[in-house]
Every structure is written in structure tokens, then in C-alpha cells.
Length: 400
Image (cartoon, rainbow, N blue to C red):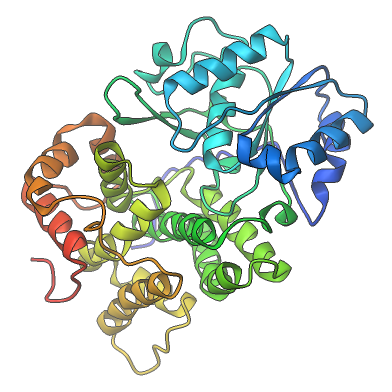
């Protein structure tokens, strides 16, 4: 049904810069926004070793910016590392924060920018998923093509005390500027390229299945799927292919812009459950869940999934809508397998844990929040079925 009476809201950075070698002019772009003072770069030790951090520091200093670097970011960040980054930024008397790295580094930077202005610690605000006002300016510079966090108002942060994945979801942490330079992704190893690309694919597909999908987000999501289908295998196996990296950088950014309002659904609920319990990397968790979440939503999403099939490059001429929708599910499964990801969480956990995981999927507010964006209600029985199928890697013989 066309969303005739639907009210939607769009949040996007004030400025987006996309281009090969654009990072070398980062100081110029920041000045154009009226941002001045000392820059705090939030990054991780791996990027320091690659020389990427030095490249950004030099570009900033060329335009007269003082810079301090917090290089202790880590994957799947928790509230403790966010507090450490914030305390560093305060001690250095920073004026704005640059997140340089994958989604984790940028998510830390988003929090640190708020705490540079606001009192207290991360957990004081994480329990409510938001901050009371806008903090210091945030510049997001991604070095992976996956989360799209450079264009979103979300930041995924784990509670260190119990390992549960929480998140911030508030316009106050939307980056003021996203600078996307595909050359920064050239050094990504194949496995990271594959897992981050799977995350971007999940964002695009889950947005199309979400309650608040609309023509604007549909168009962006479908183009992102098309670009990922074309470019992800090339980027994984031919990492220095700049065209593939450009396509993946566009796709990741577009998918992030797309889900910012409609949200993401059951696939991410499974991914956050597996991440909380087994510390499964986020992109892998999304990949494991994605074709099963698609199958779960087939009943109300056939026409959209038929469009997904075409975007994935499936030949759907002569197919019924149902057949084309099924082709999308299997097309995603094949794409994931082509880049070395098997859509099953069996390597990470135990089948006997399924009742406990299903309870988390239907009881934990950090997981059930995803169902606010879903069209289908989630029950414990459905959670068990989804977890069983995604453990076994089983598709077909329709769900219910």
C-alpha cells in the first residue's frame, strides 16, 4: 500500500563530502562549516599503524587546527571506552570531535562529543538512549563500508557490567559533517570487507521491510542493494579495486541514510542478541540473520522483495511475485556465501541456548526496541523458530 497518510521525518548530516582523496582537504571543509578550535580524533591502534591517522592529522594542521588523538578505540565499544575518550577530550580541552575508523570508532566519537559539553558519564545517559541537548560538533570519517553511522543518529554501545548491547538513538548525536573518502577503505582486509558489507546490505534490506518505509527510503535502499551486489565480492577479493570501494562507500552511506527514520527490524534483533551473548561481530550477526529475517517477513513484503531480487541481479522475468521474493532470499544467501559468510550462528553458540536467546529476544527492552519498527509482531514461538533456522542455516518450507 502506498503510504498516503504516513508522516515521516528525515535526519541527515548538515554537510556530506564524498570523494576520492577528499580527506586531504578535511580542514577546509570543517572551516567552511564555521567550526574552529582544537580537534579530538577518536580512532583505534590499527589505524594508527596504517598511517591513516597521520594523514588526517597532517591535513588538519595544514589548515591551522590543533589536534589530539585518542587511539584506544575498540570493536563493539562499551560505556567504559566512551568514558575514557570523553575524559581525554576534556583534558585536552577539545572543541570538536572527529570519529576516524569503522562504526565502532565513530560511535565512540559521537558519545565523546556529547560528554565534552555535558557532565557525567556514558551510562548516565545510555539508560535513556539519549542526551538532553546537542554536544560538541561531530565529524565522521569512515574507514569501512558497513554501518553508515556517519549519516545516522544512532550509536551502539555495550553495557560493560553485563555485556548487553544498548544504543543511543537521538538527533543530538547525528554528525554535523560526514566525510566519506573511499581511499580510506582500500586497506580493509577481506573478512572485514565482507562483514561490514553484510551490515550495509542488512540496513538496506531491513529498511525496505520496516513499518516506516516510504518512497524516499525505498529508492535509496534499492540502489544500495544494487551497488552491494555488484561491488562487494570484488571489494572482498580485489581489495585495491577503487571502483568497487567507491560503490561500497556509496552503498554504506546510502543505507545508513535510508534506515535513519524507518529503522531496522528482526535481523538486527537477532544480531544484537547474538552479540550480547556470544560477542558475535555485528556484521556477521546481521549476515547470519538476514535471509531468515527476510523469509519471516515474506507474507507482507513480497512486492518489495521482488524489487530486491532485481536489485540483487536475479533474473525474475516470468516469475510470480512470490517466486521473485523467494529469489531475493536465496540471492542474499548466495551473495553472503560468495564472500565467505555462512548464514548460520552455529560456529558461535549452542543450540540448547535457543530458549534463553528467545527469551532475551522477546523480553529485553534493548532487543524488543527493534520491533517498534517491525510490521510483524514478535512472539516467543517465532523467536525460537527464527533462532533455530538461523542456527541450522535452514531456508525454505515456509515459516508458519
